[in-house]
Structures are given as C-alpha cells and as structure tokens.
Length: 162
Image (cartoon, rainbow, N blue to C red):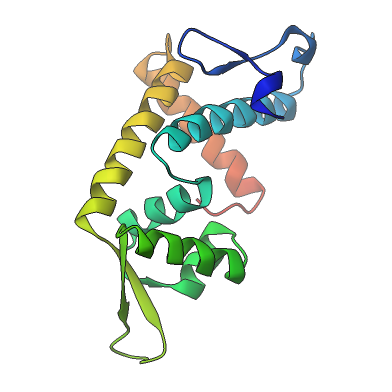
C-alpha cells in the first residue's frame, strides 16, 4: 500500500479506510490488520528518523543482544544473509554500529551499537512506545497483562519464538 492511497490522521499517520473494515472479522484478520497499521505507523516514524525497517530491527536486537555475528543477526531478524550484510554495512557507515573481529573466530565480525546507535534506537523505541500506547489506550493494567499472556500463548501454539 503506498502512502498516497492512505488516509491520515492529524499526526499524518495512516487511518483505516472504510473499505478495509470487515463487519465480522476473524481473530486472524484483526491481528493482521493491527500488524499492518502498526508497521505502517512505525515505518513513517522510522523514515522521519532516516532509518529503514531492517535497520531498526537489527538495532533493536543488538540493543538486547550485543555482539551477535552477521549470521546470528540474519537468523534472528529473518533477513536473508545478503540483506543482513547490506543493512549492517549501512548502519556501520552511519556510525550506528561497530563491527569487531570475534575473539574466537578471526573471520567472524561481532556487531555492537555505538553511542550514536544507542541514541537512535532509544528515539525509535520512544516512537514505538507511543504507537503502542495509542493502541492500548483505554485498557487497564490487568487487561494489558491478560492480552500479552494470550498473545504469547498463541505465538507458542504456532511455534513462534519471541
């Protein structure tokens, strides 16, 4: 879906067009639609921060798991090795990550966020948290916990690693 075909709200973020509303959506339809809207809104904000979705994903993982190799990052992020290498190269050129030779394997590079990368991923996380807060507006703490528990169970049932 291109940005020219989307309706936007006051913040310039996509809204759901009436034609996309289904009077009796299934749970899978609801989850899919929420995913598409979340991705669309986050992608717009990442664009404003001059970051691609794959770049954000890699930085998100490296913040939590510093020192991963290219192959490990590709596997965790579901990117092809080629896309992973291109994304890591772009992040390194922008001084957002540092690539160091592995102490165990001289031909393997381990990846770490730089201070500039840490600052940027923190900005991205703040943007993502704001979008999530909008989605969860009106839900109490117990409802949020219950939703998370149920979604984790659904992921487990499908063999999805979180």
